[in-house]
Image (cartoon, rainbow, N blue to C red; front, side):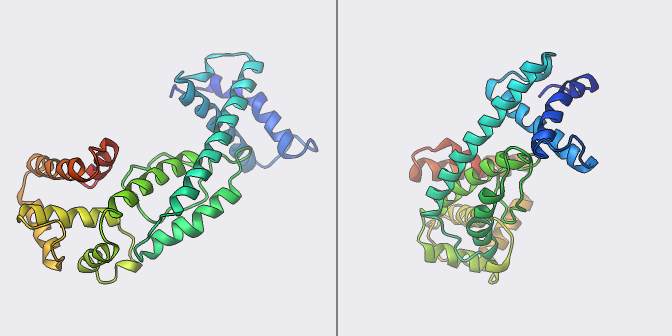
Length: 262
C-alpha cells in the first residue's frame, strides 16, 4: 500500500463528508470527533480493498474528486461481495465443524461468528472486526481487521478442520487430553498439539495413531530445545511434507498452514 500523506488524506475529505451526510441521513454534517475518525477509517478501508483487488498499490494517485468517490464505491461493493462469499463459506464450514470439545473454539465459531455477520456494517464500519477471535488459528492475523480478518480466520479454521478430520474424533480428543487434561477450557491451537504428537511418533518410529501419553509432549519439547533452529525446522518440514503428501494429496496450502506451528 502506498504512503498516506497529508495531501492524500485531504483528497478523501469530500468522500468522508458525503459518508457523514449519509450517516446522519442528511440531517447534519457534524458528528463527534470519534465518529468522524471512524468514517475516515471506513473510507480508507474501502479504498484499500479496491487497491488490493486492482493491484494498483495506490488508488490516491488521482486528484479527481469524482474519481475518488467512484474508487470508494467500487471498494465498498467489493467488500459487500466478500461478505456474501464469506457468509456462504462459513455456512458450509459449520456443516462439518467440530470443536472437539474446546469451548473457546465452539463459542468463536458457533456463537461469535453469526453475530459478526449479523452486525457487520460494510458502509459505516467495514474496518471493525467485532469479534475477539479467542480461538487462535495459526495464520498471522496482525494488522487484519473487518471482513479481511474474518476471511483469513475462516481459511485457517477450514484447513484445521480438514487436518483434524482425517483422524478419528476420539483419537484427537485422547491426544488433546494427554497434552492437557483440561484442554476444553484452554485457549491453544488444537492442530499444533496434534502435530507435536505426530512428530514425536514419527521420530520414535511409531505409527501416527500410537497411544498418546503426556510424556510424548515432554519428549518433543526436549528434542526441540536440543536442536538448532535450522535443524529443527528442516526435520519438521520433512515430517509435515510426508504427512501432507501421503494423506492430503500434496495440498500445498495445508502444508504452508501446518508449517506455522514451527
